[in-house]
Image (tube, rainbow, N blue to C red):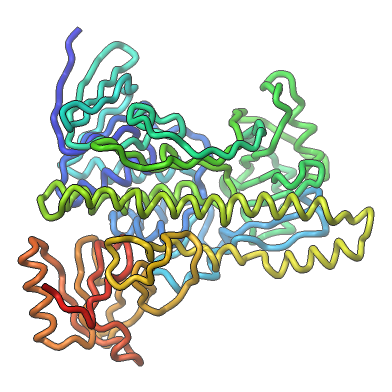
Length: 516
C-alpha cells in the first residue's frame, strides 16, 4: 500500500463549517494548512441554521458575507426570530423569542438564517481560492498522534487511498465523537438528559398554510407539559414546503416502529399532510471538554462542546473558536509570540461555552421544566395566564444577556478581572475583552470598515508622541498593525489609544499604561 505523505503547519481534521472557517482564517494569514474531510459534498441535513450578527462579522472578515447573503433561502425581510407556544403549535398561548434583530445596532452586520449545508458550500468555495490551504475530501481519519512535538494524522478513502500528514499542530473540528479529542485524551464534563431525540425533515403544504398566521416567524418551540419542559421544535428550511423537527421520543424508537405522522399532527394541533425526506436520531446531552488543548493537539466546534439545538448557539460558538484560534496560531507559528499564547485559547473559549451551557441552555431547560410543573391552565387558568404573560415579557432576555467576553483573560490588558463568560450586556462603551460596537468617525468611515482581519491600532485622542511610542513598541515586538487616527462623532475621546486584535476580540486598552 502506497501512502502519500505531506508536511504542513496546521492539520485541520473535519471540514464542516468550523473546520472551513479555521482554514479560511489561517489561509488568509498565509499559514499553510491541510483539511481532511470525510464527505466529498456537504450533507443536506438542515441544522445549524441560526447565524448571529457576530458570525456575520466573521463572514465579513473571511470575505464571504455577500455569498452567504445570496445563499440564504429565507429573504432578509422575514425575521430570523422564533415563537414559543404552549401545548401545540397552533395554541392561543404564544410569544416571540430570540429575536436577534433587537441587538442589531451593536454589530456591523445582520444575522442570517440558512441551512448548514448552504453555509458549508460557501465556505468550501472560499477555501478553494486560498493557495495556502489544501483540502482532502472523501478521506476518513484513522489515527491521530503526537510524535516528538508534532501532530501525525492518517486518513483513508473508501477505495484504500491513504495519506499521512505531519503538522506543527492538528485541530480537531470533527464533531462530538472527535477522533482528535480521543487521541489527545481530553475528557468531557457531561450533563446527560437521558433523552433520545428524533430529527425529521419533511414537506407539508397544509403546514405552510397553517403557519401563515405567524408570517414573520421561521422557527417554533412547542412547550409540551407532558415532556417536562423539553421542546418540540419546528423550523422552516425555506419559504417552500420543507420543515425540520426535533423532539424527544421513547428510547426504543426506530424509523420503522413509530408513527411520526401522528406525532406531528398531535404537536401541530391539526391534521396535516406529511412527506418525509429524512429521519435520524441523536442523544440529548450537554458536553464540554475540560480543556481545548493538549500540546500540539487542539479541538474546536462540536469536538470541544456539544449541546441540544436550544438558541442556535452551536455553530456560532464554533465559528468563535475558529476566529479565536486563527490569529494565535499565526502569531506562534510566525515567531511573534511564545507557544504559551495557545493556552489562552482554552482559557478564553472553554469558560465561555461552559457559561453558555449553564447560564443559557441549561437554564432554559430548567426554567421550562419548572414552569410546566407549577402552572397548568386546566388546574388554575388565571395563575397560568399571569405567569405566561410574564414569560412573554421576558421572551428576548437571552438576546440581550448573551454577550460572550474575555474579561478574565490573562492577555487582555486593562480588563476588569472577572471571568471569561457568555453572560454580559451589550454596550457602546469600549470595554477591554468585550465586543466592539459600531461607531462612526468624523471621516464618515465606520469602525467596522477599517478594522480588517489583522492588527489595528485605534488611536483616537492619542497624541502623535503616544502613537509613535505604541508603533515602536509593536515593531520591536515583531508586529505590524494598521494605525487609524480619527475621532468619533459626538464623542471625541471615549477610548484613548486601543489595540484591537484581529477582529477577534475587543480592546486591550493602552491609555494610561506605560509601555516598556
